[in-house]
Amino acid sequence: MTALTGRTGRILAGAVLLNLMTGSLYAWSLFIAPAQEALDVGRAAVSSIFAVATVAFAATMFLAPVLVRPGTALTPALVTTALAAGGLLVSGMAESLWGVILGYGVLFGFASGIAYSAALQAAVGALESRRGLATGIAVSSYALGAVVFAPLFRIGPERWGVWDTFLITAAIFAAMGTAGALLIAPAQIPRPDDQEGGEKISGPFWRLWLCFFCGCTAGLMALGHAAAIVNAYDLVAPAAALGTGLITAANGAGRLASGFATDYLRPRTVLLLAKVLAAAVLGALAIFGSAPLVYIVLTLIGFAYGSMASGYPAATVQYYGPANLGRVYGRLFSAWGVAGLTAPLIAGALFDWTGTYTLALAVAAGAAVLGIVFLWTVPPPPDAREGTI
Image (cartoon, rainbow, N blue to C red):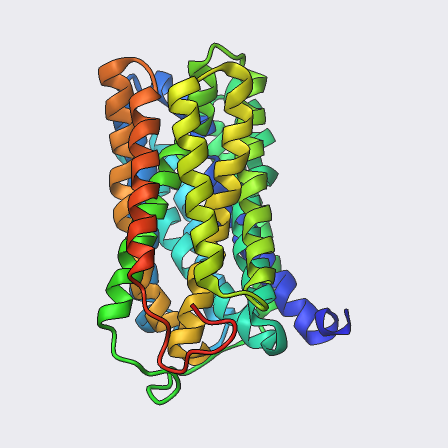
């Protein structure tokens, strides 16, 4: 417990605050229905906002070696705060689809990527003896951001409207991000080391990329439409918020639990179990869809998706070393961006076409199965040892 106090505890607290703020992205599904009404557009158009945000997030992660430079974590934390608060301000003032795409999709998406990369590297560096746990803390706080902001995103559009809710959120982000930046300031972003785990990004990387893409596709088709999936089963608005809360809380729990587990188990084992669980529960809901089942499925898919979110950073550290986490994982994370662009749009288009989420859930289950197949082809790292994939 002493490892989580003092300077280390302060850095971890700052990482948590920044990721809680930007992790509210996962509560976007609560905005789908009110934003669709306010903008007078189709479901696929509203889904494009979330898709753009995920692509901006992934693009920023890919460019992390350039954008998140070695040195103090204070600078990326302050940039994150400015982009996050500014993006919501633009969205609230524009009151148009393109304004929300720019403010929420682009600016807030960029903020999410910078925060995620900086917070993850700062946390892993601060808790070197338990890197898996540090990873779990950093990435779970991102997922739990949706739980923290879900009440505001549910009540806000009903009470103040979509646009004023964006403005209120911008003010909260400004305060929250500033506090997180001050706490994380002592952390140092490491300089990449080509000699430490410096295996060229080739065969294993691209197989991991395909595994990550398939898992993200399965998870994001559910995460991006969680509230809408609940509504599709004729459940009331508070039930939609409950569904979103369940999937995001389970997402956070899965990230923390799998991060802890990868300090003792092979990440490949953790990832395999997560993909099997995702395929099983998504397939079950597609075949036996019912209102009671939807809550169980959302909870379990959230846990499985969260487990994958911690498993891949852990695998990256074991293949390429902790100093290369930002560079290599940033490139691997592009799989999440491609899935983020396609999965929510496909789910929205399939809903518009069929009027239900049954086909979308079946496609998501198939993506998880394909991820299992790719995972079997991933070899162990050259220095294969206990705890490696």
